[in-house]
Length: 212
Image (tube, rainbow, N blue to C red; front, top):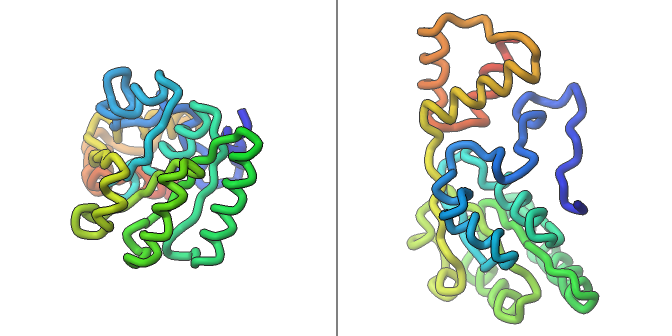
């Protein structure tokens, strides 16, 4: 599929090499991605509504958005509110408009969407209303306080959970599989490593990589 993530280079960081390749690979968010979850139901229907993914760092917000686009055959455009300005957004909307005329739908992923000011957030509205883009915003902050009411009224807020012990252990097992050897840890040290991650999968994998 056109949006399938590129295969990471063998020398890429462990967290990149272990990025999920399908929604089923996303750990710890089964309440959203499972058959009865909001995302699972949207994918089954083949139709996405605009949404805000709210959750702590390292819980899979970016991966989920990219895999969502792939699952329903949409173009994927990503911008970051930290690094992107109005010009980047205008370019993204213009590209989406051209694609829409050709019958191709676009998922616009906006990372750290709460960093855009109110006027910039208002700029999304016409394109969301027209259906030029399906907006998927990611935020670590409470959307009720950080996002415009008008934008929130047009998007579903989905909450991603901190990764629990079972999800973190699953990530460590995947790391051991890809490295083809176990982590050099006692059971107690392994538990301490997972506890130090505080539910952040990316942090956990970065720490695990230093042990190899």
